[in-house]
Length: 345
Image 1 (cartoon, rainbow, N blue to C red):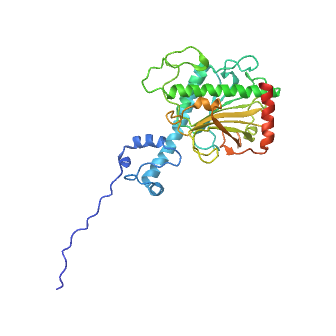
Image 2 (cartoon, helix red, strand yellow):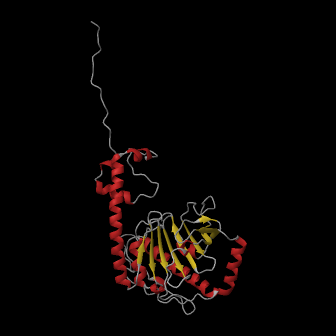
Image 3 (tube, rainbow, N blue to C red):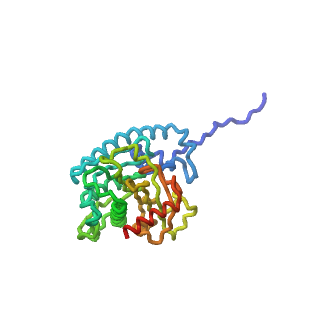
């Protein structure tokens, strides 16, 4: 009889689950909410460079994301309804929050009348935010939106815009109002949790008060103001898709590589307008979501201090920025800017 080696049971190594997989579902859900587009959840053990294969094949991950998508849609609708009701109650303004199915994920627009300011007649005095409005917007700005667009339209409180000078002054005013938003960001995001807020002043140099702003840091990546004076009620959606051209300003001291709006840099400021200067958009963008340790000098960008300038354009309000102008030459665009500058200054 042939001799056989002793047979031993085959030892199978148990598949070790990652720490992330062992977390309760509610905890995983919170972590998912903070992932940036293109990021992957830490399913694998160790520090493996990619988990994309796992995400494409894992039933657990798919189930998680299906559940999150459903719950997020319900949660978002409830949150926006609650925010809108609270905002209307505190500001006495008619506000509308919208998320378009055509827009990328995590883009939101809040439409306000021009009466959101103390006065919007640039020929008489410098308009400033009503305190309740700017503080009321904070809960929206503190969420992880990629774009928060604050749009102004309608005839109620609409500024004069008959002449080129009038329209230019509207742009100057919007620049000042966006600067006030960046002041708010600096005051809020430089404050550590639990720190006394008495040292933080209000917008536009008014009296210092305790807890002038809420404590939660601003986390919306791109915050922009847009306005439309092209029709009486400001509600023509088709016109909102017109091409906007303008300039983009970056910190010239940062080494950002390629000269492109898509280049990863801590922050930048941009100003876009249509040909007639009846519609426009200004925005401040932070790739770090306003982590001021890596994103200093926000206000300096809007003041165009130590900045390098490039031309840019977009397909409409809140759209992705593209390098270069669209439908107009650089010399022609600059000539119009110089003519308006001569009128204003």
